[in-house]
Length: 253
Ligand SMILES: NC(=O)c1ccc[n+]([C@@H]2O[C@H](COP(=O)([O-])OP(=O)(O)OC[C@H]3O[C@@H](n4cnc5c(N)ncnc54)[C@H](OP(=O)(O)O)[C@@H]3O)[C@@H](O)[C@H]2O)c1
Image (cartoon, rainbow, N blue to C red; front, side, top):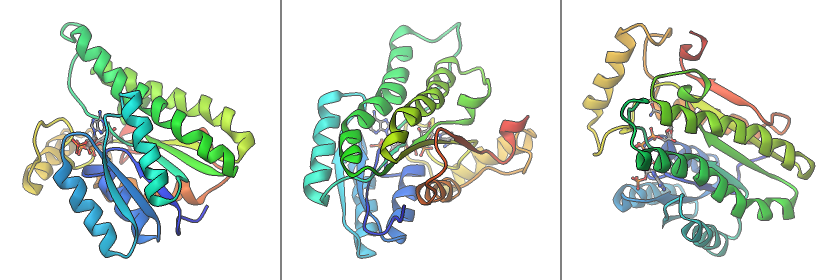
């Protein structure tokens, strides 16, 4: 599929990895609906950057774990941008936790945002793709979803996204729709922080993990590394049900 003139909905598209994906798609001629939940200012900045490239973009507030808000978000995308061709399930968050200290409500929220969120967004977008007999669904899972880290609820939610991807790919293949996931390792973003970090703070976090020898390539990645993998999946029609590791070798350990 060509990105050119296609409409992509990127959940959590205002900052971090989602922002890089939204901008990469716009640089390749696509239009983007940029979803956010808490930070309208970064979503609006991303929208302005996309519009300055001559592409259409809108910012839409919605909690991906809320069925009604998701339905309204997809309807707004279709009405304002003329349809939807590609869904990127990127919205998410990280918190540490293990069997000794994860409270039930934290477990539930983790599943709701990552797993139910991907399900709800896909459920509302899929009829639009089936109608056209083409489309792409790409979910941003994690190294934590393909190998065991101790953060139990995060890893289970991200691992479930891998299985979600494989199963959904089988159902949608007859309609010419591909469904894939990308598992990033450590990406320099605000993930796991309750505030927007400075570039210096982000690079310090990356350094600490790299120095521990966790990442064979010896450095964290940047959001654009993940966006490149998204562009690859959009442009390839014979790859489906796969999870591509973009971890600097971390996932091989
Ligand atoms: N950074 C990494 O090292 C890394 C590694 C592996 C996987 N990932 C995955 O990559 C994805 C993006 O993470 P990031 O690193 O870019 O983090 P980030 O900079 O913290 O951005 C997270 C984005 O998700 C949005 N979001 C969170 N909860 C949401 C909800 N309930 N509904 C709608 N949007 C929601 C946020 O919206 P607001 O801006 O409105 O708050 C924000 O745009 C996540 O799924 C994460 O698990 C990240």
